[in-house]
Image 1 (cartoon, protein in one colour):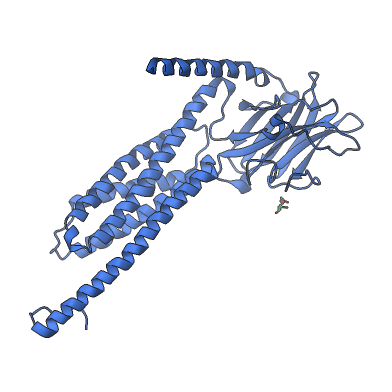
Image 2: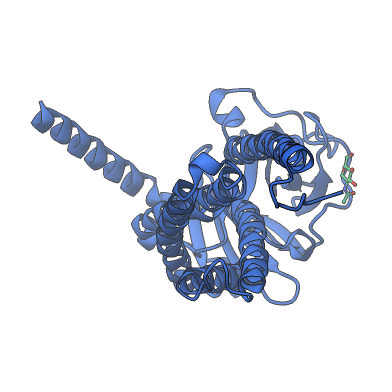
Length: 394
Ligand SMILES: *[C@@H]1O[C@H](CO)[C@@H](O)[C@H](O)[C@H]1NC(C)=O
């Protein structure tokens, strides 16, 4: 049984490897006019298109691209764009190459707001060096440089592309609605300048990133806030003393352990990423790790309950603890933006946070109720029996 599964998996892998070799045509050796060269190439999964690019994260965050595809018919148009708003056509910031009657090619920019192309106009990513030419093989090469400066932070973007029928009167007519046309969208990964030769290592990196995200979201993002809630509210229940303390410490130790693993994968990813660093994400990560480590050591330096310095230790412990949690959650959202994770993961994480928040609010109300009741009971005892305890409030 297990052998059959392994065999099936191996066959599947072999089929995938064969398919990726067969699709390598687009990226395999192509020379461009004007000595244009690019750091990375990716065969796009539909319409026989490919994209080459170089991303310079410096100053303007400049992305130079060469998009290659054959129009749907001779004299037709081709288009490529980034969509910062979603993964389809609506919202795409597109470069559309159209032939003119003189035979020269023109590249126009379109800020596409719906499912019609609309009029050419400025796009969200200032475009320069636009050019297009028709190759002897019938494929159109579209060149351009987009400035991503205003869209900093994202390392994985949504891209869309399309090919259309013959252009008459200079206006690109709608493309076909076939399966391949509608599915012509993918992620563009700027974090690693993947080349075709290294495509299997890019899969490994993608996997590493997912592991990094998962470990950190579970540890800094869920376990540590949970541990803080345990400590804050269980403490009020006398019967939970000292169980709350051990629960809190175990929760935070496990969270910290998983968090350190997540942090280490992050540092490793940072070292592997090709000239691109997410300085803020990285720095917040380092601060969170340092403060978290401090909390662990502080546990051993905790003064006894009766010690007059204990109150200061408590103040320190709470402020550093809450800082770690707030920074940790902030950084998880930053990381999700960098990786361009699907909305459903963001929604799932927000739902978990809401759940923790609601639990905290309910416990806050319950424990306040208990504290008030306890004080009332204590002051009643004082009034009737005068047992020597001063009431805590008058
Ligand atoms: C693109 O279109 C949208 C919606 O019509 C608009 O909000 C946005 O400002 C436009 N962007 C640019 C760069 O003109």
